[in-house]
Length: 153
Ligand code: HEC
Image 1 (cartoon, rainbow, N blue to C red):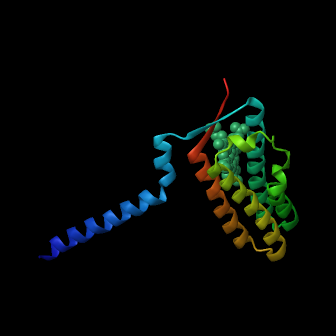
Image 2: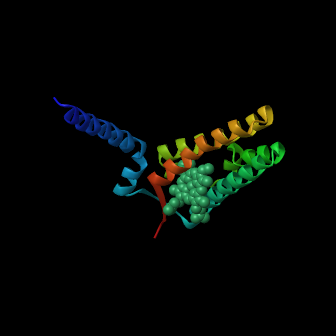
Image 3: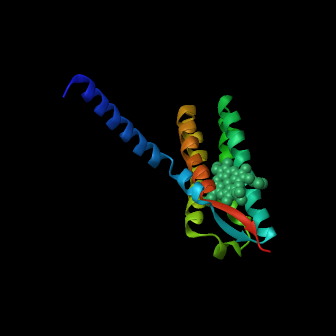
């Protein structure tokens, strides 16, 4: 085999490896192409969950601003706000309607916010906090790629 052939073959092999790793890294996109699973809720239930979602977004925003100022107190508070405590006001009827995968991802997200709140106070480490925030936000991305809400007709 001459040099050019070896080069072509190894380039093809490397791009093949690249493609397979991109495919697995982008799993949610594949799911999205197939369509997100619709969770059917009443208007009231949907309102409750979407309010929770906007709370998540608000926490993320406050955390990013707080970290930029090394304001550990407000950052920790903002994380705590989206912790497990945030779930307490949810309509009971949601329990039966939300798929298991949704509940697991939701719990993981609340718990990660609680952990972030603790770690920010303990460590006062911006780099660490940003890593944890980035990692917990994978839950936002995955869940949004898997599910959507629709209301009962
Ligand atoms: C367990 C699943 C799940 C997790 C985790 C999750 N979301 Fe959501 N979120 C949803 C679903 C489903 C919708 C509705 C999407 C639709 O119907 O198109 C939504 C909607 C939203 C909305 C729109 C709210 C509105 O009023 O329309 C925002 C903002 C949002 N999410 C932010 C976040 C952020 C930020 C995180 C992570 C910190 C997050 N979500 C984590 C499932 C999730």
